[in-house]
Length: 131
Ligand code: CDP
Image 1 (cartoon, rainbow, N blue to C red):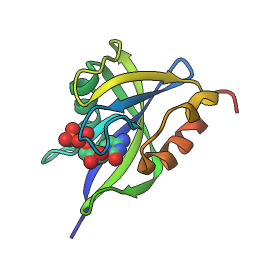
Image 2 (image 1 turned 60 degrees about the horizontal axis):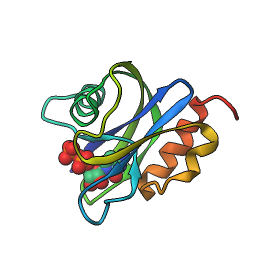
Image 3 (image 1 turned 180 degrees about the vertical axis):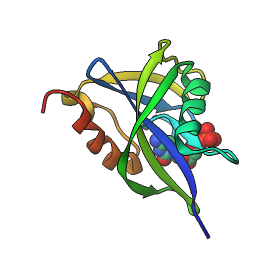
């Protein structure tokens, strides 16, 4: 059986990465993630990413490149991550999150990332200046 893909975005703007604090479910609330969500029927991961970032953050984005790797989530789900460029709008926590932060490379360790997002965040750091 093929695992279902959850796609998340390493949203990059002005040399910073966007981190989002989950507000639900209770076991994940308070932890930080790269925003995203499950693919819907017929969507490619980049299409799903654009939709999820629009729904959750109210912004338009352009997917860039896939961050190498794939990380297990709940049984039957895997996480894939793409970089994304902000095209328009200012991200706001409309859905699933209660706080957003733009982090410079040297600040990436200042939030409590979900365990499964950590390798992707480390890879995403390579797209940020200052290393
Ligand atoms: O919005 P949707 O219901 O499609 O998806 P979600 O609830 O945001 O994410 C689906 C699952 O992927 C949840 O269990 C999240 O915890 C997980 N996820 C993750 O582990 N890391 C991310 N960066 C995004 C989602």
